[in-house]
Image 1 (cartoon, rainbow, N blue to C red):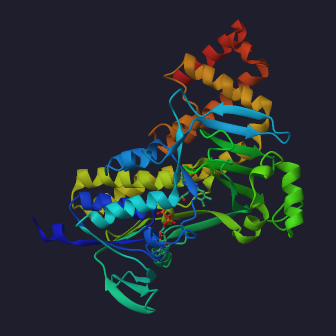
Image 2 (cartoon, rainbow, N blue to C red):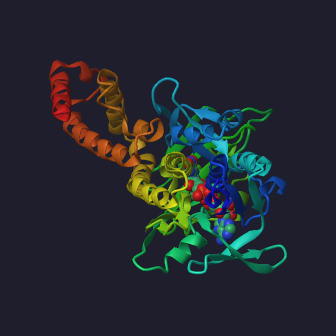
Image 3 (cartoon, rainbow, N blue to C red):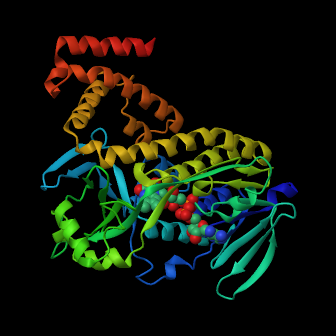
Amino acid sequence: STAADSETLTVMGGGLVGSLLALYLAQHGHSVEMFERRPDIRKAGPVEARSINLALSDRGWRALEGVGIAESVRDVAIAMHGRMMHAVQGQLTYQPYGQEGQSIYSVSRAGLNRRMLDLVERNSRIRVAFNQQCQRVDLRQQTVDVLDTELGQSRTIPFRRLFGVDGAYSAVRAALQRTDRFNYSQHYLDYGYKELTIAAAPGGGWALEKHALHIWPRGQYMMIALPNLDGSFNCTLFFPFEGPASFAALQTPAQVRTFFEQVFPDAVPLMPELETEFFENPTSSLVTVRCYPWTHHDEVLLLGDAAHAIVPFYGQGMNAGFEDCTVLHELLSRHGHDWNTIFQEFQQVRKPNADAMADLAVYNFEEMRDRVADPRFLLQKKIESKISAQYPNQWLPLYSQVTFSHLPYAEAWANGQQQEQIMQRLMPHIQSEEDYQRPEVQALVAAEMARRRA
Ligand code: FAD
């Protein structure tokens, strides 16, 4: 064992990706020191522990499997087999996400984080400190200034290798931003979001279909809901900041109620706390962050939202951050202690995929809030799944490539755009599901497939 084997790695941020990263680094035999700004969420009261859920899909599951916690997470996850669209008049339309047996999973963010922190704390190679806020990174001296938010005291801690997993507003990234030829951009949507709640049915149970992700698509805005274990649903309203239908336009409880009764009439009776929550819960913004490089020599590496924050509409932010850990794990297995190679390969492999995922996430916003309410769009999706069934080796719907496969995001996005062009050529010949079997349509599809192969 060389000196390099025993060096301590510093992980800044103990969120979802930071905790998983620490577990992977420890699995490779490294000692890890992890700092987290917030108090230990396992000790938080019910208010802070308010359940907000996330959709976990195949990429995330694989990363959890690698540290042996997938099974225990599966126990508290709710399968969502498809999207349930709610029209204004309450009419429901259902669209499965994938093939039989394929689902995304609703998991509690706090629950998941707690489970991972339990593992982190039980791991003898990892030391974790809460209430520790990174204030400044000195790249030249290789030190971090960390404020103990309970004691109100700062100290300077040396690091040999620093992993920045401190989220979309990363302090570690802020230090890289001041280095030469560092590219950085952030882009905010004109939309914000607010978390609301659909209560459990009286006597327990779920007031809406439990195994679905519910969407109220309304063109310029939408609400979604994911199931919780206790029978409630977490709703998220994605809504313009300004304009006729916007956060700015809803200033009083009466305005909120009137608006919701007009546009989400089937949901309102299930939301007893609507007005209170609307004014008590924050209105949060939606940002895409792109930057490069993600490294500083072989000393600093950004992962997760710190490297690539995306808007939440594909349910992939956490999954992408978890996949970062899978990729790093493979590189650690292949290159041992050659950190320079590991860091370089990591960013070269991941950057195009993170960029593609950022684009996909914005694209899916339009699909969810607008296109899923269009019968022609839903017909197109049905035709696509027929093509996929007929040509399984040549056609996997884009959603499945992103959600139920491990194809690099950039490949999925390129395939998806090509498939969309094909659908644009086919759909003018198709007015109903039955049309798919017509000989002239079959001939067109066959020709497209032959061209794709060529
Ligand atoms: P974070 O979860 O932000 O964790 C960063 C950690 O670092 C935090 O614990 C923070 O306290 C700590 N920290 C921050 N600054 C400092 C500092 N200066 N010093 C020390 N510690 C610090 N993803 C999905 O896969 N599926 C979904 O369904 C989904 N839904 C989403 C819905 C919404 C509304 C939003 C906003 C995001 C959603 N995401 C989803 C994305 C997902 O939340 C993020 O991608 C994921 O949390 C990123 O994990 P992270 O650990 O990189 O960052």
